[in-house]
Amino acid sequence: MRKTVLLVALTSLLALGGQSFAELCTVDAVPAATLLLPYFEVSLDDTSDVNTLFSVNNASAAPTVAHVTLWGDWSLPSIDFDIFLTGYDVQTVSLDAVFNGGNLPITAHSTNDQGQFVAPADSISPHGVTSANPEWDSAPDNPLNPLFPGCNSNLPLDGGQGGPVLDQDLLDRIRNGHTGVADASFGGGCIGSAYGDNIARGYITVDNVIDCNLFFPNQDGYFGTGGFVSDVNQLWGDYFIINATDGFAYGDNLVHVEADANAFAPGDYTFYGRYVDGLATDNREPLGSTWGTRYLNGGGFDGGTDLVVWRDSKFDSTAEAFTCGAGPDWFPLNETQIVAFDEQETATEICLPEPGGIGGVSPPPDPGVDPTCFPLETGRYTVNEGELLVPYDFGWMYLNLNFTLSTGGQNDGLFGDIAQSFVTTNLDSFAANLSVGFAAIELTSACSDANPVIVGNL
Image (tube, rainbow, N blue to C red):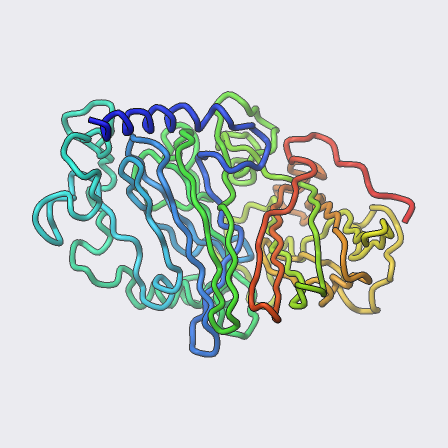
């Protein structure tokens, strides 16, 4: 009896809590309609042992489908797949299992979950310890829960055979795509940068959808009337990047992107705005545009500071790939202003402002060197390496990552000089063999229709 009371209380809390504490246009960890893994790494050989794990959780008793898309750092997709979630379900994905084994999460809705692996039924995606909770799964006799007819032919992904889901062609596609190598499935082009270290990189989006589907978010028919995307905020998750070779690991919440069908109008900045021609039909809040974060290069963190930076190019390409080596039309991405402060408020501007921005870079960039600090849609950048040359050991950084798209393409001028982004900071200690990761502080949101004030008088 006590279990029943506790379960009812938990159900009521989760049903009410998701929206009660949410604040639209603010990056906060609440149940959301879209999740963003801003950056991942996974090694494809034995020279390093790097892996990324992430989870997708259902905060509701109602079942749903989470649509997962892998993107290269040139912001083109490689594969997508569906995860069926029963009520209060959680699924963990190991990218090592995906890239090196071809394995994807094996889930199934009630129609297909009929003991395909072992008896009895409800063995692939169990929806509770008793049969008293049929509402936690898609139930033919429960009109409140859909049957997800699109999942009939799509789930379980391996057809109940228990083997790898991805055949060799798909495995080659993701391994080549996320290491910047040309692949025939991309028409001989590339969807990402080539680092030459055999580590796959990119980012991942997870959307709450009303049914299983094989659409990428940048394809017509995914959003809007007749599309697949749900505006119900019921997903949450976390991620971990593990470097077993160096003995480091760090993690954080996934970026939770809330939806509201009544909050955005055509012309407003939305998370998937570039893929819906700025019409806001994705109904999803944008992320931040300027950030503040700490850096520590010494003391207890003698390993220094890395910044993981995800950016929105605002560019919608109909191409499947870009020319290898050359990159997308928008590459490299510029920024408005990056300023490093020490702990006595001494300030130095680094990187190069976009053309027409404020003048003066201190210190000036080396001749012939592109001073853009964060040129890709996602990447991990080490403070005091490359263009992030900070003349102090301890302090904080102001990152104004806004820019105006100017490629000569149809999306030029979309959202003006505002650009959404997300920043995570990772601090390493070689002496203590530990690392710490945390999200940067959002100073302004891309919901704003005005570029934030430039830090001046440096």
